[in-house]
Length: 430
View 1 (tube, rainbow, N blue to C red):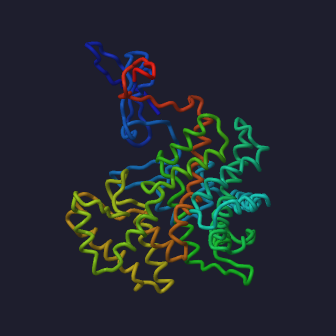
View 2 (cartoon, rainbow, N blue to C red):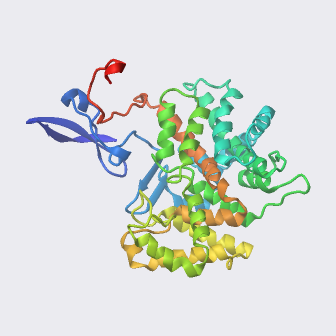
View 3 (cartoon, rainbow, N blue to C red):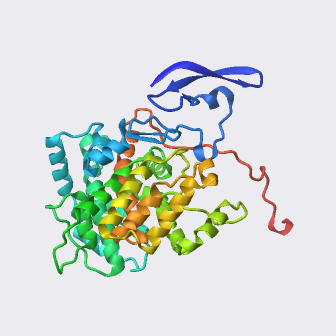
């Protein structure tokens, strides 16, 4: 990061200079940390559309090019050549592991997959029909009541233990939320399986017979994990950072991130996409709904198309589109009603002048929802899968934030537009 240029702001005839910071990639930023002291003014940036809230070395997105980098590596190369745990190691340690490091990291994660036995009793406090994300928020937040002996976050070893625990235990927590919802017994983790195969075993296995994961489906889900591992300073990551800036423990911070991710405008988008497909119902009605999507007076929105950051094709969507075809082919679902509907919607959106002009390309949520449904994952669990994967990025961003020597508790300013100062009148005069 360099600061060779300055930007000049003219306020009431007085010029004030601020340094311009230049990163490795992306837009330069004006350092306005001294703005209040120099001018008595603050900036107004609703939604933080033009504000860099931190310096980060983790993830970079170029929305115009449709590029996503983890620690400098293109997401396409990582998804094709690395497992999710290799990507997790990369995000945590800044470099890809060698064979020995990979084996040691995988052993470490396997050693943390079990949950404290009393946590299983925690689930019985929820209704069976509770949304799995509600269960996730509660269970993950409660982990601090069970694992509180490594809470000195100035200690790198303690931070590493928290990272390993959360990455290892999230698949167990997610699978238990699913099993509890459908009334099946919890399945213990199996250390003879890899990370993603073990998750599928806990999700779909039963005590009645041995679960044998399909390698094509395991690889598809592993890629989903990789594509969702981190995504720069999005809403849930910013939530984790803001919660962590107070010194809150990482379990509480991740619980806060899960709560934010639950929103339909964020992690719930793939769930909303499948619900939209169910609403359309049949290929014969696609034209009707495309027309509605173009009508600005109609409240209907085409979910799974377009992205706030990507103004080109979402690079994750390209990968998921390929994975989607492989999974449907493996399961013989090419002619399934819902999947045919999705492919027709995709075809029209890629060719229709309206969608092309507005760059409303299919995004990763469009394809990942289809793949997860094909894998047998119910719609209500989609965001839980997202949270499982994103926990890696959240923990890395949390650690980066609390080890930053410039880090301070987050305290956004506001533009107050309420009532002016006034005095309380006696009750008989109001």
